[in-house]
Image (cartoon, rainbow, N blue to C red; front, side, top):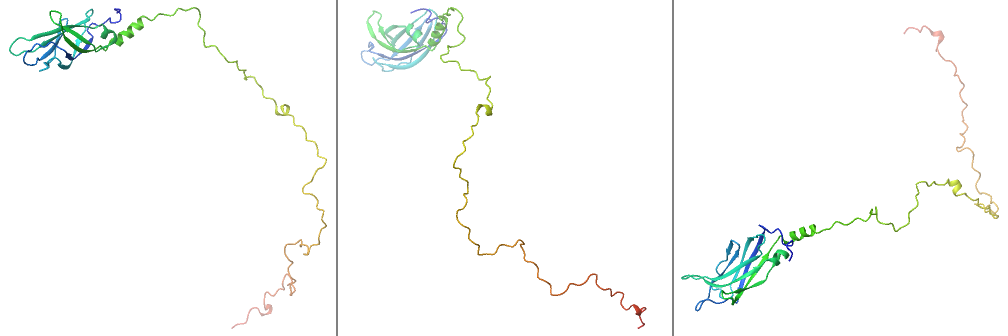
Amino acid sequence: MSSGTVAGIQGQPLEVTVVSCSKLKDTEWISRQDPYVCLEYASTKFRTRTCTDGGKYPVFQEKFVVPLIEGLRELTVVVWNSNTLKLDDFIGTGKVQLNKVLSQGFDDSCWPLQTKSGRHAGEIKLILHYANAKLNHQKQGSSSTHTPISYGAAPTGPPSYYPQQPSYSNYQHPTPALAYPQQPYPASHNSVHYPPPSTYPSMPSPYPPPSSSPYPPPPHSAYPPPSYPPPATYPPNAGMYPPPPY
């Protein structure tokens, strides 16, 4: 395990969940034992609750946050049996290695426990979670990135796999009269005039031809027209002036 993979862990949090124990050494002769677990990391210590009557298979499901120390990649667990009238009984202890969780970010292994004489005292299951493991991998990847060596000027663009298209900017449209000369159509020998002349003889009309005047002439008056100007009758009774008295 390279030191660069887990570098920079000072003060960063490590989550430790004490799940359970199994096949613990039994320190009680009559009643069931009451186990609890202590975590030790340098001067930091944590204690779980007591699993009353847990016996050989206590369950805890407790999580603790441990501040990491640079250069210290080992956690110590100690399992005790809680007593009321006397000192607690030592069940077993074990060492938890942190290399896997610091490099991969997760570890849910079971760790063996031993007595003071080195005999097997059971197992403890822990879940370790280190959230900054991915961040350390990213830093390591960015620091190990090599600058590519330049072997000359790079091409300005990808090579073209298609032929160049001709430019139509200077194209001039031809004059319609010169570009498309119209050809005269040949005259037909058998020209047919429409409508064709009638080949039937004309029939006499049973009706008289229409008059040129749209209206009939006015009838002749039975009376002679008066002469103009009319005869003068004014002043009347020229010899009677002044008129006789009444």
